[in-house]
Image 1 (spheres, helix red, strand yellow):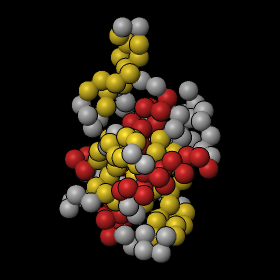
Image 2 (cartoon, one colour; image 1 turned 30 degrees about the vertical axis):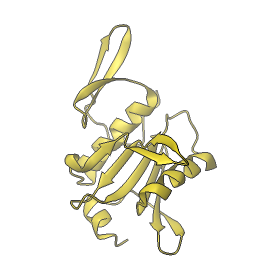
Image 3 (tube, one colour; image 1 turned 90 degrees about the vertical axis):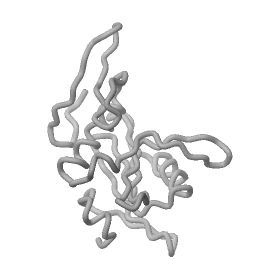
Length: 154
C-alpha cells in the first residue's frame, strides 16, 4: 500500500487465521485489516493526536436510517454535549474520491445534520463546512482542531 498522507502512527497489526488484523484504537478490538480500515485508523489517530479530539467522543460505524434503509457511517465526532460535529467517510487509497462519495456522505448528513464533513482515501482529504441554515457548503483547507470544530468558527 502507498504511504498515506497522514503522519506515521504506531498502528498494531497481527497475522492470524491466514488474515491480517489491525487493532482498533476506539473499539479496543482486532478487526480484519483492509485498506479502508487502515485509512480509518490513521484518521482516528490524526483526530486524537493532531487535532485534540477526545477519544471518548469518536463513534465508529454509527447506524442510521436513510430512505428506510440501514446505513453505517465510518466515523462521527461529537462535542461534549453529544451533538455530532464531524462526519467522515473513508475510502481505500486506490479508490478515487468522486462525486458519488460526496453524495454518499451528504445523504448520511441529511440524517445527522453535522456542520463538518470529511472525505478521505488517505491520500487526498476533502473537508467541507456545512451551512445547515442556508443549505450551502464550502471547502476548507484542512481538518480543523477539535476546539475549532466545537466553536464552529472558521
